[in-house]
View 1 (cartoon, rainbow, N blue to C red):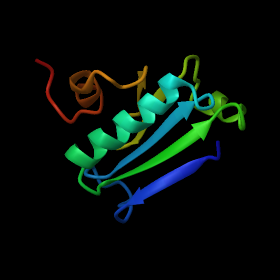
View 2: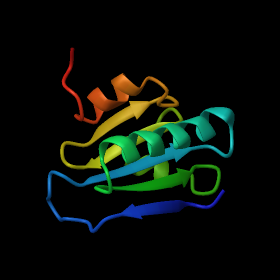
View 3: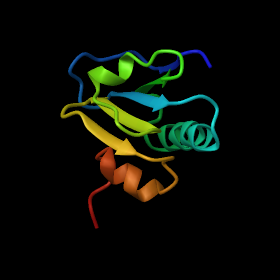
Length: 107
């Protein structure tokens, strides 16, 4: 699988309303495919064009894992807005993902 990105809207440097997300996967495993679908659904519903997703396949570019200290896959890294946050898993627990991305307060 190629590294791909889906741009949604213009990037606002330092803008707290723009999300830059990187999803680390390893090939087309069921968990990887599920994580991609779940992330796209959450972003379309909650971020409405204020995000950019970059999917990194570690089978093709394993060296990229070191920069974000990836130890498990799939892993989502929120690079913007600061601080950097990581969520591990296939992102099927929507409420937990939204809390992790600061889109919803902790209940």
